[in-house]
Amino acid sequence: MTELAVNPLQGRRITLAVTGGIAVYKVCELVRLLVKSGADVEVAMTEAAARFVGPLTFEALSGHPVAVDQFSGGMPHLALTRSDTDLLVVAPATANTLAKAAGGIADDLVSAVILGRACPMAVVPAMNDRMWANPATQRNAALLRGDGVAILGPACGALACGVEGAGRMLEPGEILAHVRRLLTPQILAGRRVVVSAGPTYEPIDPVRGITNLSSGKQGYAIAEAAFEAGADVTLVTGPTALAAPVGVHVVRTDTALSMKKALESAVAGADAFISVAAVADWRVRAASTHKIKKESFKGADPVLALEENPDILHDIAHANPQLYCVGFAAETEDVEQNAQKKRVRKGVAMVVGNDASQALGSDMNSVVFAAEQGSLALEGVSKREVARRLASLLAQALDARGPGSRNAA
Ligand SMILES: Cc1cc2nc3c(=O)[nH]c(=O)nc-3n(C[C@H](O)[C@H](O)[C@H](O)COP(=O)(O)O)c2cc1C
Image 1: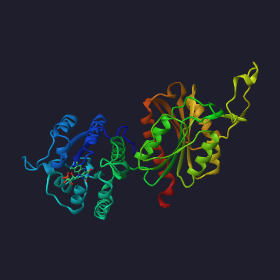
Image 2 (image 1 turned 180 degrees about the vertical axis):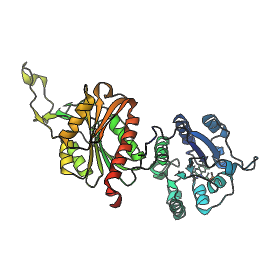
Image 3 (image 1 turned 180 degrees about the horizontal axis):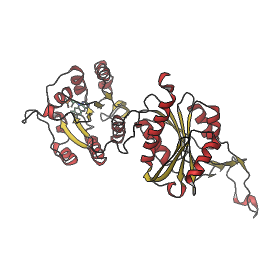
Image 4 (image 1 turned 135 degrees about the vertical axis):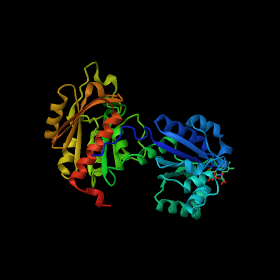
């Protein structure tokens, strides 16, 4: 089984080539994020990039001297990517540098580093929308893609030149997420994984409702880990305060019934369903369409009539026998036994028992992965670690079952 490292960036060597566009200022933040994540980052800049932000800023952020001049001594164009460099990232990538990279031109330090690289490369284009849409740039991007280069973005949005369009550089946090994926073994490549997360919200009237304390953190971390491991991920979420994970299709729902409907269509053709959402057991039988007035009870205690919600995990597992289903169980005692019992009761492949007293809202968790073959406990670990362990177990289980949707595309 391929175990995913908890942090794919820890100790990894990244060379960052910075070229001359307005977005250079955002790449300072990217260096900070990469270094904070444990990567060793070396920066090379074009002469044009150095006119936007001085090399000193990148030196301070990366902790290494920054190379701009290829004739400054030695052979920096070869030294900057070596056999132990894990990834070369070009950000921002100008139209000019994309053209040179596609054509194999090496007339300055950065283009020579690109041509002489001994590692995979990702480019993050950033330019005016007309420059990006120009057939020459599109041809160059297609050539690079064909050469196995990862092209990250660009996004649509407000551009520095004052117009809206395609050409905007991905945000530093988005680039970081893609770099994490590029440095993670692609053990879920070709798999479609559906994750549910967060609480549900059952309305009482238009301004009040019943919900629970699920933060969504564990489910979002699982969606993120599955994306990093190469899966095509759909996250069906109840209301949370969390940002959508990069690269994941997010479907927002509120009630248990709307979550069930969204999940039923999301799991069509999927390989796995990881049910992490804390779905309300009951909903209000007749939610009011107008705000209920306090006075309307005339001093009597209000009574809410509830009716049972469907058991989403059970129903989806039974309607889709080919789907590898994983449930989560929040327990306060006998976590392993209760998780195994729940697994059998729901008829699913695995149930992850959480210690409810630790899990709610926290970044940490203690879990037991309860499967038919046995149980595996993880004590006091981050939700991200739980997620990456689950991605490894999932890949192993899906591989044991056969190719699945890998052949469907
Ligand atoms: C203010 C200003 C902003 C620029 N922004 C961009 C940009 O975002 N994207 C781009 O491809 N070129 C941009 N350019 C043009 C490049 O700087 C120019 O093509 C340069 O030759 C690129 O050199 P390099 O690829 O070696 O860094 C900009 C130029 C100026 C003066």
